[in-house]
Image 1 (tube, rainbow over the protein chains, first blue to last red):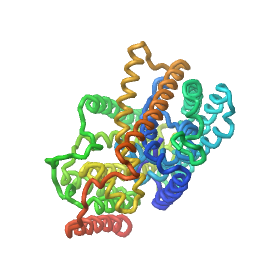
Image 2: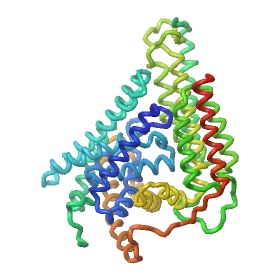
Image 3: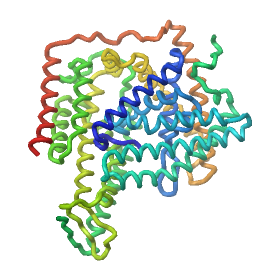
Image 4: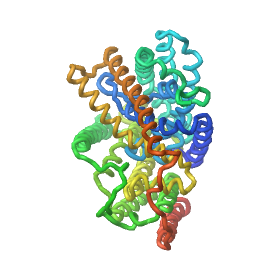
Length: 209
Length: 304
């Protein structure tokens, strides 16, 4: 769920812009600059994937995927998510332009946490990788819901009810997201395991060097 | 003093559920119609710089892109800081006038407003029932159901947020579609936005269309093989394979794209798409626009 314009107080929306800008510049320093065009292409794939609707009873939910983005992109996920949200806001009005900083924090911080979690615990077997991937997916959505609630609550006590219900609405998404992430990571582990190594990251040597 | 108004129970469905259901029905109906039109109609690809002059032309099209971006974004932040319903509705009025002057395509504006309805209708459903009761609030209680209190202040708060979001959303089309995207991004990087990030936006925008095409192709292949979405584990597994395939193809594609870019002499920058010249009218429009924003703030904070 993306926050629209006009919800957050001015200080919070400007503050989260500043925090996101700092994290983006931190994130760029950990990526080799020639990898940025490649990341742009991967970002658009994530963008398309986030538009996929998963049926849930009579309604459907769309995936957030901070966990998957973190697992596949590592620290680069923050830029990728910021970019994706900027495009979503500019093209489709999902999430307001003035709330872009806040929305980037909501999705980007969990992605970085999940990226670290996945790389730390992924192990070697396919089964373990998909279980850890699923846990990362569920964790990412849970963290996103928590950060969303915290940011909503900065609007004052009038928003407590909205924050509570927003968190409750994320519970089915957490389960679906966890399962989908587990299966997706399992699929990638079978088909192209090299992708689960942290890509775009400074420490890994590219084959072109 | 808190005013409590007692209403008969039968008014509850009439005043709350019926309008909510009607709005929901209207929005979903409109959305499916817009979706169908959106897919069938071949829209202009912004990632391709237009070679000939667009026949639409207004002061927005000629306005220097650097000034346009800074002015409109500052103005959006001004709108988001308004606190009264009267001033936010005035802001919608101003946005509508600007929208008409800038001669942008009205269909895309409608599409943006529709995208907002999900979040905003959630606020309208939740806020009237959850905001804490302050002295002076008007409370509606239906029959003997004291656990369900409709607070009129919550309704007003939700309306303020909704009108701010709409006033800003109405300005997005004039901001973006009055210049080709590469020119807008060029202006953004001239304003100090990192050039690398501007290029990434351009590239992702380009490949967005490529991958959405790819995703549509893959999903029609799945439908041909008898896949239909249901609420079960099998659907999740299939969708996960679909996503995994999309990611793998995108990673493979990046290699090809990057090698092709290198082969064409890419050294971290694209040639500048336009020369930006500053004219006196650019500064003039900016001054007027910012003055308008200041007037809104004064109206909101001092007069109201």
